[in-house]
Length: 445
Image 1: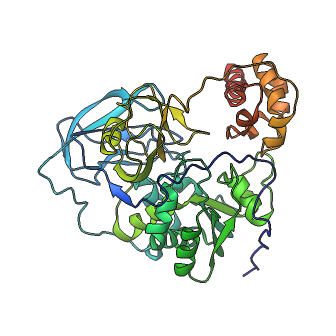
Image 2: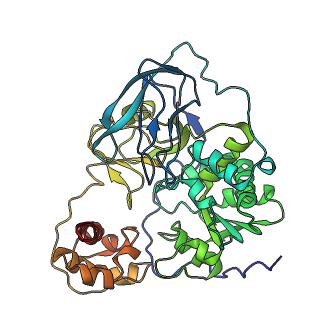
Image 3: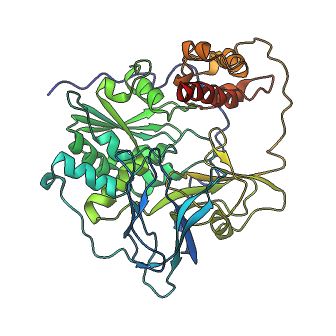
């Protein structure tokens, strides 16, 4: 067995920004369960890749944890009933992305116990690598950090490649959000157990759990339960520390090659919530049917960390937390940097929903856009060392070759550039447009 790589002494990466943390409202609040609602909406597209395909019919009775949609391809996952009840409809419903998307609607049985059933876990040692990957895929596991990338795809190490080190992301660098923090504090054994399962599945030598230093209680609790072979690594507080490329740079001082992935450095990165879900799946046979969500912001009456069945309407989650204040202006899924504003509270909580941020009129101030003054602050903030102002100009002019030459696809839309721009230019918006311009030309060709 080869030696572990030397860890970074600085515990950070170059560039980035320091937005106010604003986690104090929920960081010390224990997770509480949101009651089951009368009806849940489960979009078939809750992850990167092909939508899931229904395997149930309208009027069919389903039990909690039952598979109701199978993977629609390799880059796709299963979908399960979050409650015992009846399939009320298979139709288009409001998706958090603002579109009407194919969904399965489950009407809850008010008299059911809503238990998943007796534990039916399975031993990884009894499964071939292919069988283990299939179990994870059917279990519906996706990354819980926000991108919702299917977990089994990461575990499917290509032939000729290997994973030596598993990195578990506990940074949670987005302001306001504390769901990962509370998961580490309240379920440290599950996080560690999930890390061990992931390490075994890919044959890794060591595991590292990276946690920002503004979560000292999580660091201490995890250190009390980690076994030999897994190390808890504190990293400095900076945004976007939770991006996998930044986390690897912070811990190991190694950069992922341009256009590459962590596996190019023989590493694999997963979120702490995903690790805990992995433990639930293998030890108890419980698929991904609920997740921890932070409900916070100045426009919510009672900020909370809540355990929410997937498919629960945002309106019901907000009602459980006391409802919105009279001066509420925006409801955002995720954090303020990368989150998505909602146009309807009928949209449901998805597998990738980490937070529900409620902002009032004082925290939503329209910005006047002025011409770029060539100050260079966006380039100094960009953790990928891009020139966002230049890319924005190319995007405005639909200059495809220049966008590709300036590595537009290296941008992961962290919004650090928009945050520091003194001219109020929505630079991350132009990054998205630039990517669309390049993609559209490729499709046309």
